[in-house]
Length: 415
Image: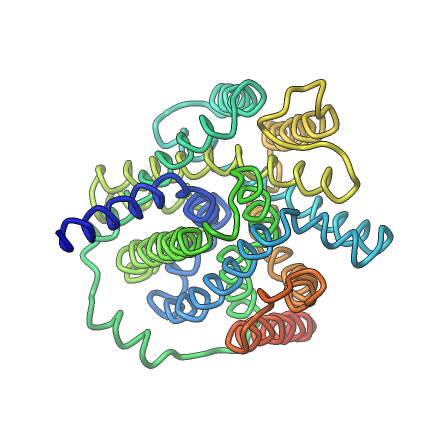
């Protein structure tokens, strides 16, 4: 009888977890977008397995930061943008969000660059693939609901594990991987530091914090759901780092050992064919396409959501156009700008991709400082303020990112 009751309770918890599952996994998976894949691919091609060590501290920081984010959402019932405006004032909020909007337009452009590049591997012209994907993405958000969109997003998340196949087909040297992680060779030149910042900036992106908290609220999660939300966050963080790990490994074990340098993820997919076979190349390109479509949907939504939230406008996928016109117009405008830039002949897409990730890394400390102050405020969080461990990891992440940004700035004068 006791065993039966335990089994029943376990099953009930599992069903509850499945019902709550979504915000953490979706946010983590979208993190591996076209910009992220490009950054990881370039890191693997240039430094081999040498930058895999960065994924360990990134994972710890990601779990802690996303957990704080989710906790703020379920405790306050408010989004991060709303909380920043209420506690920092409109002027500071305006300057923070102007920087974030510029970065997110660059990020959205990068996603459509990923769509264009991945489809070129399959012989489809960007003037066909990009507008079609943009129309599909727009319809999904404008005509769909949060529940229907989230189910599609979760399916997209599963497809990102195709990078595991590409990496294994590249026959990686696992002993070298172990050595690179245990005994990393850290450098302080401009290129190395900029890629490290890019990896951190794409692993823990500023926009993620706003989307995560907004998704928790839109899903209607409460404090009693917290333990399930925590597992959702952990699974999402694991998925993020596992996919990133195998992208770096795929490029390190094929491109780096053959001294092939690349500038974007599409180059990696095409270069894999003679080294690991056509199937590995197509799998890599397919993963890039899925990630790009996935993120081209989420990123403009996240941007529109937190901007509208910060300035008091209605926002949300579940709302109709006439209920949240500012949200939908901003979402549509970001999509149009991203598509327009991609369709300009000879647009500097590589520079846009890499610099959008670097800007993410530079802006992240500003967002994290705001979060840390909010999550430690007892008037806002009550008994759910941060524990010492969360504060140590949170403030360490801020200090490290500021330090890396200063090193990047200084090294740019001497490169």
